Length: 423
Ligand SMILES: Cc1ncc(COP(=O)(O)O)c(C=O)c1O
Image (cartoon, rainbow, N blue to C red; front, side, top):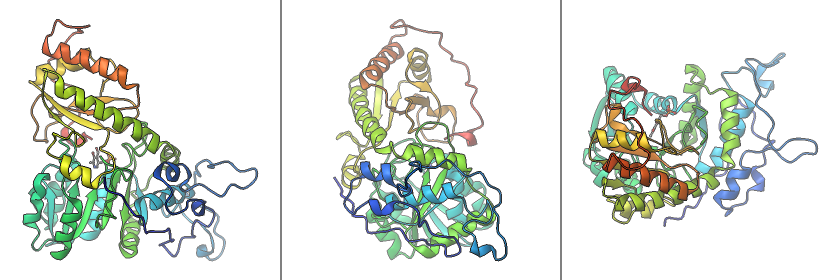
């Protein structure tokens, strides 16, 4: 597997904001492992009588007598102590300056808005997260920005790079889990004069470090595995270059796409268990994927960690773990709905990366090129023996409706939100 060398050390990159002089980054030595880094990153020095991590500061404004630049904090849209602590933590993990946003989509829009001007050409995956494609084609394209699209598999975007200002990558893709060679595409894009942004949401920086692979921007929905408890909407952008980081931060300050201090504090608290959670989730995801392959109800399985998967060769080179999401296809919509009617631990919900196992029939939203029986499953931290038993019973019931504890089967249209709401 790929081993990463982190060369970035935190340097405050916005000069009008006071640096994190009180954080404990120096406790993290080069070479320390991710499981240690996530526990300590961004925490304050252990001063007598202080907690490991102080609670969030709720402030719209701060006392700023005289010259406001003399105060650490001035106004709630500019900065917040909880943001700086979590940003510092993420910077040591991503390997570049980080700016938090109110959501993953706010982070996506910040990069697109900052990099692109009318006339710019963007190469985007035709199979990346649906709302990213939608905002590209329904908003940015109307501003005179050209989007050309090709699938993630086989590095098909490489053929479209000529004249591009930006290459957008998502690997593994949500929901089909295709993978591209990020380092190769970064080299080709840079040779063509394009910057590269990688949506790293499905992998997280503990599985894959896009900046180390050559990317210029990393986009994350911290709503998923980063916060991991299905209780926070949050996002961030990490940059290779300090000048771009300052532009991204200025965008946030002016557009106001800021996160709440409570959400950021919750995410920072959850960071300490990220390695523990992901280790369990990825091991269980592998077990589930291996089981799915053997079940007669399952027509196809996608998991980058399966040696038989088309993504395996590249994923095993560039990822250090294969993620918590497994996708599989049952015969049709009815079979998928029978699966959900029987499962008790696999809750039907959109989103992924959290501690609770969940899944959804993806075609219920529209917008993704997947069969009606395609299910995206996010593996949580439950005991895998219980998960496998539950999934086995639900699959048996999907195959033979009389099997197991069959519940009523809702074959009517779901109560889905409009397709733009999917995650
Ligand atoms: C790959 C990917 N990127 C970005 C987003 C957007 O994140 P958020 O819902 O936090 O805005 C999502 C949401 O599902 C996603 O799956």
